[in-house]
Length: 443
Image (cartoon, rainbow, N blue to C red; front, side):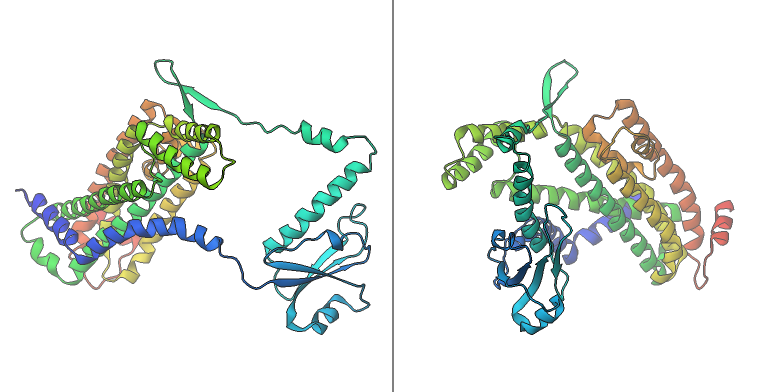
């Protein structure tokens, strides 16, 4: 086996057999699921204490319109000569807020104020405004004295549901969904963004650790610095791919086991039919037609996305983006003795990656715009930005050009990173500046 192969094997096995790797590989999918499910469950937990809101209505028209709920209770009070603050303090701790209505809201909507010692949450604001808005709207319509005007307005409202269809190369029609494409693209972008930082940082930490422990002095007596750097980069990259594949299998298994996995063909129909039947048993108003429409909508949302192409290019961009930035991280790790010294070199790299991530977010609305196009070709941003564009059927020549530029830049970056690595890996006790780094590149 070649020397690089031995280094790859050492880096891979030493990390895969660690207890921390095994634990995090098994626990991370559960953490992802918890992030998606727990906030929704917590949002359903209501406050057990009912907050009292005093309503001082100087017009006498609106206090009776406000209906409370399980969280807030509106208590109309007679007009008070006291200032709202004095009245609030006179009621003790039992009062949450005071709502004052000073004039006709139909003439002046600003004649309503909510007082409290605490910042008012949006739930109370929405509860008040929604009820009064409906009443004031009806009053405004009635003021025109046109028979059945409200019914006419209600009947004139049209809810437009735009269906999107695309043609495949054979001219056949398939449904598509911009929302599904945006969600899948953003999810893939976020994964690559996280992986570049996580595994690139792992390479940098490994180089720094070996340099600090002086292990590298023994290793470079048997292998060239370039072979050592490449072996470490590829070994850690394989660890990342292994972990990613395990996560996909675990997440897919968990999703299918709880009935939320999106299958293909009859599998999808079976899952959706089962879920919709269960909903129909809970809510009899959900008819079989509703169930069929829901299943058709779900199939249409994902039917127009080429998942085979998306997964294939995800792997390519993951590998290319990781190799590109891992070589830079390895060079940074070789230049410093302590983690604190990496900041001056990490800031520019971090800013580039963050720019790529924000460019990807802004490219969702216009995946074919100038920002998305150029950032998907520039190698330092293409692994992140291109993942947003792929669900929108990027031309083949753009994908090929982007991949070619990415791996070509990786080769060029690795060449310069190897020159830095070769010199910095054996240098101790000296603060490295950008000027010094440029000298190493010229050696």
